[in-house]
Image (cartoon, rainbow, N blue to C red; front, side):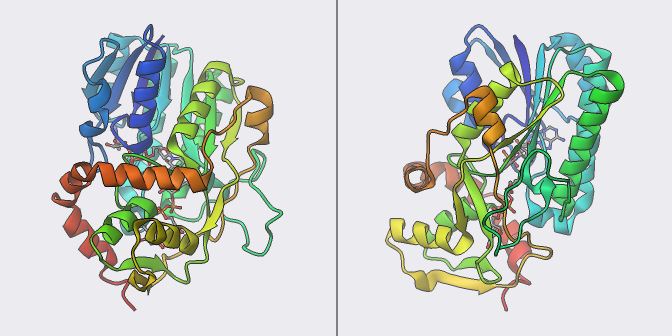
Length: 341
Ligand code: NAD
Ligand code: DAU
């Protein structure tokens, strides 16, 4: 197969590209990425010289570029990871999210339609379902939970999902969608909770916990997410949605305390700051369909996965330093300046 992976220089996309390049030497993997602040070619160092790998810089919302690329590469499959992904950035600047997440997705769908691409997979998120109450641990998101987005980010992802489903119904496009819970692991940009807290704790800086720290996220190791997507792309039912998650719910405070304990840093570093506007309370995925239909089983649980992840950041401090020494300091000052109570 010739597979175009979009957003393959980001956190999850780069793990997916590495997985596909190494697992399927007979396939050609074409990584299409705009290299925004979140794209990092260092993530691809382990496979950049492999014969079945190719990187192309470009924008999924640039129609001419995308159509030319499809004509040239004639892909058998497109897996769309490319997106603006940070909820806090979407609160400050929703427009970028509409452009990439909605218009970029419809541009790819139009190209798949034009070139009769045999398979399109949309990498979506559990955030499209909105949130669950904290006092109902019996409730989970299933594939039939109605879409109920809370943030400009999740609204843009829900909108993209609806276009994917509309192109399936109206034009018969062969699509699948996956909706995964929060990922953690190697190569995650330090704007997201876990790498942000690790990098700040390592530098003995305050750890900004939003609100009371009681919001709950359902954590999945990035490699388990990528294996699930591979199964869905190869064996999933056309037109279907698959939820991905491993039943690893933790409060934010639990996660931050685990990081501090593992690094041997004091809890006095925790600083409660102004809450995120519209902050979703709890995410929790029911992955039964994926397990039963496709036999997916996660290999990590959170307690082992988080320790291995912390060790990765300790062993790869150069990777983090390259990010922290760029525009990141300006981002951090701007994003957190109103949060100190
Ligand atoms: P990320 O922010 O780390 O990476 C996004 C990548 O997309 C970057 O390499 C960036 O350069 C690229 N990109 C952005 N705009 C582009 C454009 N217009 N054209 C081409 N490339 C562009 O994101 P991530 O956390 O790896 O998430 C990847 C996908 O998985 C997203 O679609 C996200 O919604 C979804 N997802 C993420 C999580 C999570 O916990 N991180 C969970 C579920 C689903
Ligand atoms: O659920 C899947 C989603 O998970 C993905 O679709 C998104 O792309 C991804 O960013 C993530 O969204 P969250 O908003 O849950 O992730 P984030 O790491 O930004 O925040 C996790 C929790 O930690 C959330 O409740 C907010 C809180 N938080 C976050 C940051 C950055 C803090 O308390 N302090 C912080 O500084």
